[in-house]
Image (spheres, rainbow, N blue to C red):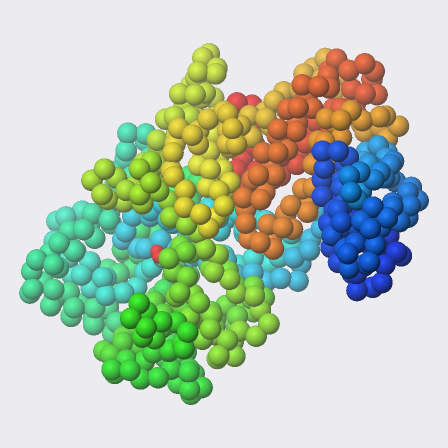
Length: 594
Ligand code: ARG
């Protein structure tokens, strides 16, 4: 069958358990029951400074306590040595066989021994969510890439993931857009243009429509009134108006899909669950909140107040649920999304990957959900991210102050990637160049995003992103191709056999690389918990560096014996698999050559 394989516990967690057991034997329960503070170390494979941290409470000298723990750990058969250093550090070195056996087990599993620890979870992930008839901007790019990485990681760990693309497809602006189209039938607003790189110019046409309609709306009082009547017609289901609305939504969504395809993100039309989907639910949601006494009337509107959410003047800031004119907005819609996701989709975890500037909105939504009794034991989280800045440190804009088109950004990265690939390999064929440049540029943009701490602002700098040096997507892809080329060469010269050998002693660089490979599963668990893809991105960079240090110090093809070569080739293979799997979880391709 499609056996994904069994979980392989990491050596780090085995060491933790061993230290915990030593603590349990040497100390009273209340002291033994805490994090054994095991870390990787430059002095040994692992170090624990638990003795220093709890000696006082235990009424012992750190050195004495460490000595007691040490004598218990000395009996663990898979540890080569346990030493005391400084005032009470425990330096733990594992037996080489234990490390190699660990790699053997991981290499035998399709999922590299990663446990499907999220199997009981149903996770809704609200991400991307651009606005219909507007340009998708860099903020949406962040949401799209972060959301997609989380979807992949949680799915890999066995969760049932439900993608929700909450596009902005409803609101009074549609009255203005539709009215404008009806009055200017001669002005084409659909996407037909093709830009200089051969990519269809994705969202620009609807965006141009938006700007033209807006200008007329602001300048012409009579048009404004007709636009407002058109809103009423749309809301009451007038046929030709609804048809026009559908057209606009479809056209825009198709343009977004082109960007998704180009980026290689998982979103497709089945994931569209825009604002308009919730219209039929709004009356009922609000009625329930009224019945439960959660909303109150204020100036004819329906709102929810929170005693500790105050504005600059000290007044309570309301969540607007229904406007005075009876219309619903963004607040009501998100009350409906959360009720729907928790109650109908039965989410155990509901994630909203949205700009940090909407923190107060989600705080309010989650609190109402709790008061209403929809949110009980589930986990709901606003997965926030910071603002994308230009090189001037201000929010990213074009020179004229407009939003930068995503397609243009990707084209920029593509051009830069072509340049640097040609520099490295002047004789490359045109077709290969195109292929590699596309893979490298998308990988570069994604890695730059996903290696950044998500809550931070960051500067968009294409030159830095598309570079072979430093922590970049291109560097990681390149390291993968280097390993692949070593493997190819081994096969071509008839020495392709790859096999770990638990009888061989490990060089320090082999050891470091092996222990890092073993951390992959734990890293994914941390990402699932913290929802921070940069931890995986950083891990992969460390892995690539460790491989490069290994390769410099330990000859593979020219190894001293057949056994050593085979074992190093096995290490190469497992490194490549781990790297490729990790890149895939970041939504990035690991090419065979570049
Ligand atoms: N369309 C919104 C925007 O561009 C983001 C929607 C996020 N999702 C949500 N459920 N509110 O800002």
